[in-house]
Amino acid sequence: MLALLLSLGACRPTPKPPAPAVDTALRHDLALSEVQAAYLQRLAAAADAHPDDAALHKASGLAHMRFALSGVLSLQARAERDLELALRLDPSDRELARALGRFYNMRAVERDGSKATAQIEAYRAYLGDVEVARMSSEQFVAYAFSRLGQLLELRNRGRMLAAYGVVRQLEAELRQRTEADPDDLELWAVAGNFAFFFAGNIPTGKRERVREAIRYFTRLRERWGELRAGARDPEHCPNTYENFMFELAEGHVALGELEAARPIYRELAQPREPITRPKQQIAFVSAERLRNLEGYAGKMELMPPWPSDVGNCVVCHGYTSEVPLTTLYTLTPITLDDMGPAMARKPVPTVASVPDAVREVIARACAPCHLEGGVADPFARLQGDASLLLHSAAIGRRVAAGEMPPDRPLDPADAAVILGWLGRVPKNDVPAAAEGSP
Ligand code: HEC
Ligand code: HEC
Image (cartoon, rainbow, N blue to C red; front, side, top):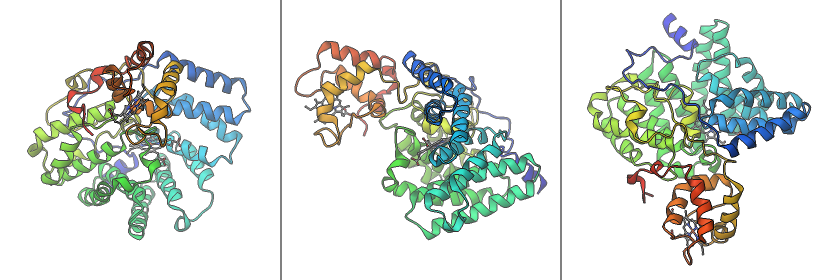
């Protein structure tokens, strides 16, 4: 029991057998492009120049946060500082409180409890005094995340038994609420996520927790398309589906259910557009699992599913960032270098990385058909920076082939602007197998 509580309190994956999977590079901190750096500098300077302006700090904080989440880890501290100051200046900004509360989980996954109290306070600012039973679904999701801060804080104070009590209570609440509302898929997603997390972090009851996680995620898989659009929003989280489904497959394998896992890995092994680096990594690891599936059957070491460190945030939120393989369990060592073309040092394409010149060409030459309601809307809505990033592989392909616009090829100067921009998203970003996949 003591061992259980200690390891739980630390929110630390149980020590694994001498880790077979070793990554060469622990953390890739990505470079920013000039455009991106200038953009962030502008926001930071404006915030610094007006220490009493909540809106400016919020803008700077959210921008730095997005880049941090998508892999520029060095921006985490600046993001926190701006968001914290903004919240101090305007404690009534609940949206901000929620974002900050969630952002602190970047520490929680690193077992860093130094902001646990701040996290609890941020969530308190968001939730107020509402009772759990009366929370909306959205509030309950935030509440569930807030419990992570509480766990870390109890650990800080050495109160392991209380920490385990929090886990059990949260598990019961998740079970109850998902049963009461089988159609609230987001809740099912959160419940599955926590079940996997606890399965990996608490030495007892692993199988039961994995079984429960599978139950939650299987429903999610069956009904993915019904999930609230925001939760599938590719701007912040282009890889959510892949990450969840990878966890599901790993759970099946840990329980020895190879036939259930196989089709999921097969699907993941062919990354779908929009292609991102984390999706490629998941595809790479899925292919490895398929090759050695028998060997993994029943291996509880697969829990928690990879990645269970700060990569846990990047794997969903990243575009070109590499997710460290440090917490990946494999039978034989694999490294990022085995994956082929490395993009680790490329600037992160994320919102606000699109140059004005590209925006201008798209608005003039593409938007007439590619805006909401336009003839090409169902194929690719090119509206906003995020959509350009998401469709960048397809845009590059179609423009390079002279196929877009369909009626007349793009003016060569305009084509050069677009292809020049995409030169930063290397062509080998898109594996041949992914071309033309849905
Ligand atoms: C399984 C995919 C997934 C993982 C893993 C994930 N996120 Fe997210 N994240 C999302 C989705 C989806 C949203 C958008 C949810 C919404 O719109 O309600 C989101 C939203 C957020 C937001 C709110 C953004 C805003 O502007 O309010 C923050 C902050 C955040 N995530 C931080 C993190 C951190 C920190 C981690 C790692 C501990 C992480 N996320 C891991 C999918 C993920
Ligand atoms: C005259 C209308 C029109 C204009 C202008 C136009 N498109 Fe399209 N686009 C379409 C139609 C119709 C489709 C769907 C049929 C197809 O894929 O050929 C499409 C599909 C696409 C797709 C998605 C298909 C895929 O390969 O994934 C992309 C990306 C795209 N266009 C990019 C562009 C870009 C970039 C421009 C501007 C340089 C542009 N389009 C200008 C009509 C247009």
